[in-house]
Length: 253
Ligand code: PGA
Image (tube, rainbow, N blue to C red; front, side, top):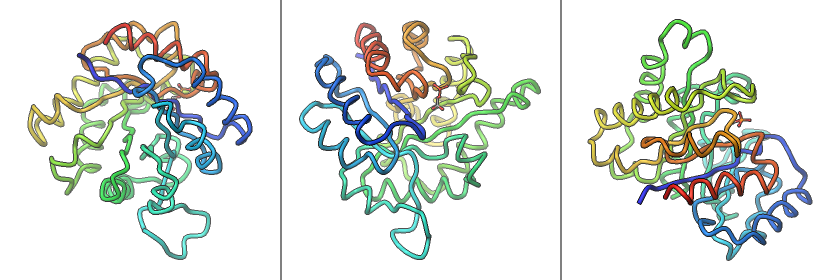
């Protein structure tokens, strides 16, 4: 049976009231694979989302975290703060954070380590820009991100890490990578992880595709052997759309 994670990345959308109403709507659908669904929300919504999803099987998490457990870092949120709310996941290294907020492979690596130590599952984002893809450098670029991001992380912790391949040129642009392009890169990432660790560990990892995934293109993307789900931005804002993508995954399972 293929393993899936259908994860909605809400980015900077929704008030807490809107988040709770989304949670109630999707919970009421009683998805058969609710356990494979997650919502990654802004910090202010997390406590209420945790309560709204309790007992539904649906997971929730944050979109960023600081790697230090506490300190003089105005405006930041720590791993213990997320742990207290009971989050399941946390996105790390999204391209928007790398581009607008100075995230580097070094800080990504520190965040992965801090989350894994606290038993929160990181969803690590990697992916190339249009310029890199046009120069046919996507594999070299993504491999170098993986080598730097996983430095010093032992194989035993890998089952707790999810990788999302998100080509920057496909995020929020309506331009989806073709299913073959997405599969090629997800398979490549699995191969790199196999080389850095071992094939068994790599085979069991969840590798997601992200970039303009929506109900209409999800079935074909999700049917690819190396794509274990999606990190979904725009199409995760409506409960019906996220549910439709989750149901496509359930049919393939
Ligand atoms: P998108 O965003 O689905 O709106 O392209 C995906 C992401 O950035 O995680």
